[in-house]
Length: 261
Image (tube, rainbow, N blue to C red):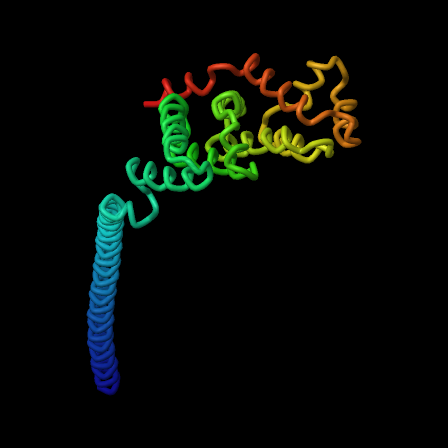
């Protein structure tokens, strides 16, 4: 009898343990399911946020590009409308301005008009701005001290070969103007040393030392030494260089002008 009671008690305990185990297992499964659901929701939330962030960045990039395009168009319109205010004078304004200046320098309106017409004729055949040619001629005239001496300045024999040399050296308006003024300075420097102006011409890409060396049949280093020591006559060197420019580079400026689009 006692054995049967003991067996029944053991059986009840086992059933109770089994029930507890089933409940525990069910709770574990439900907990795991809830964890998986929460993880899936977090993943979806993170993915959605990343997608929204990418869309926002794309929209911001498009907006930035559109703004830059609007700014570029507006700047172009403003430059076109306000060009005179930025110093880009018209041909008529430049003609009037420099005619008045030349008249003061030459003490003659007719002579001034003739020089302006020379500048316009040359700028139509060379790749230099009309204003650059006018300004260069003004400086050329101002280098002489009297109206009579200014009237004697020969414009074309100086600016044409210098323009050809500047174009041959792949120079622009600055190289052209600098070449004209340096050659003019050499021709009027008396017996002074011309090493510095020759060096400046050489720095523009115009091989003046080599041209002189070929002309007089001496090595380049000897020519540099002679120029430094003042053993080259400036007026002769100026004429020599202009002749060398005509021989080596004649017509370069006109060809460059014709090649412009």
